[in-house]
Image 1 (cartoon, rainbow, N blue to C red):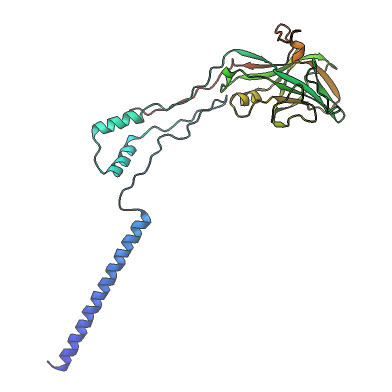
Image 2 (cartoon, rainbow, N blue to C red):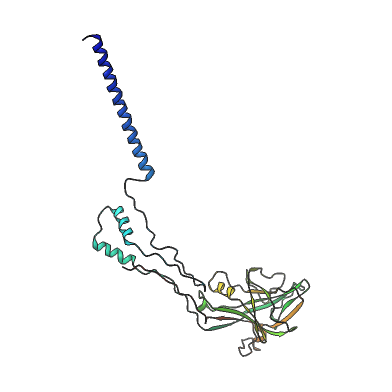
Length: 303
């Protein structure tokens, strides 16, 4: 073979070798790209994805509560998820069994029944005077509320709530104090707050009184011979266990000087210390259940 022929053969061999190397590099790049894309997108083996059938299910019995409508269960999503996980076809009998489970009504806690009108007399009461911070007034037959300059007179009250009302939604609650004397002014505007800790009739004075915990609105109501305030928000919070019932504090909101005398629970007791309902002068918390209460609603998909 002459020299030119040998040169041409070597050139052809180099071209084939270069082409093989190029094909090998392209194959490696394609394989690497496929593996990277699969990891990036999560493609490949099917994975079980848990399905939350119901959400946002909570008991709420507020007067203005509007129950949310839950979406119906979609069995086809459940079948697809189980098929991806098990890798086998689902028999008709297995589908029917699962459907029976998923179509059970959504459970909810029934609101306690609240009916009629509940009158609760004070279990403890006292009044406090910033001008005499060490004096205890828990056994007085009158409670004083007022202001003289910067000196304040507060009232502390505790009402033992009926356990049968715990968790119930109420229509209205009002605080009623029977007037024993004073300047004859209308029902005063109050600062109303629940207490952060209990108080003791025979030991609590201005210096060691429990702190107010949370202020509430108190709308004055006009009733002859008594002063009454709407305390629905506070009583409802107690009944729903949003805050503990340690009692409440009354303090004058007005900047004017005045003093009003109210009968205490001691004034409404008999000589022997027992209650005297006929007297009717003790501080009272009146809970009215006569208004409408909301009904919880559960939505279940049709089979």
